[in-house]
Length: 337
Image (tube, rainbow, N blue to C red; front, side, top):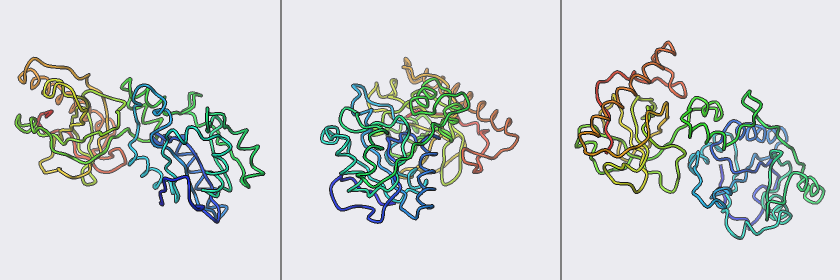
């Protein structure tokens, strides 16, 4: 997949492309259907499958509060590549882009820069200054632009309600990870490279793999039963995601995962953490002894939840994507550095 960031420049698909446009946070089932249709039509027409997306997300740009992200930029790009998108215009959502009229966006970006021959969007798609651009405007400019507009039907989850990033955030916020997985089409995960922390967990005998969130604002926080992908295996564990009020007294959020049945060095490696169930919110304890006692209870509860899932599945394999996973029966306790 080729990735470009600038509006100006020569046409990126001089022989034409089938194009879709959107924020695509989380790449949920609705997004997946739109990308699949784009790829299918591109193959049928012999054109390049292409997409336009934005960073920061438009909703986050206008929001007075940081937007809780379902996916990092890296995860979103990987999702585009997995969907077969060959050309991606990753636009900086900034003041000049916000000020661009909808008509100029069509002429300069969709036609001149992307060479769109067919454009796929949702029926509620809006674009351009003050969001005046919509499907009707795209259709009105078809003759000038030499493209055709196609509208993707909304994807629902069987309850008649459209799947959206807001619904996914709502499910995650309420701790309903099963419902979030239904909307996403996969379990909710956060991935990243393991970094060195304060090593407090190791000092207590409970080492953790630490992942910084950077500028990403997580839609969840607290203590969780998790599975962690390490070298292709999904291993059971317990994790903390938050500001560590007892140890750090607040500050930068950190994802810390303790693997029940693992003894190895993960520093510098990329891991992926799947959130299975929320155990509790973060809280500040009076001392390390009280924290340690709660860690014991958290680990016991996490092992019970993960083992119950394995018993319910009827087999000791079949992690989030079907890979073998180890049973969560190690007596080790969790620790949060």
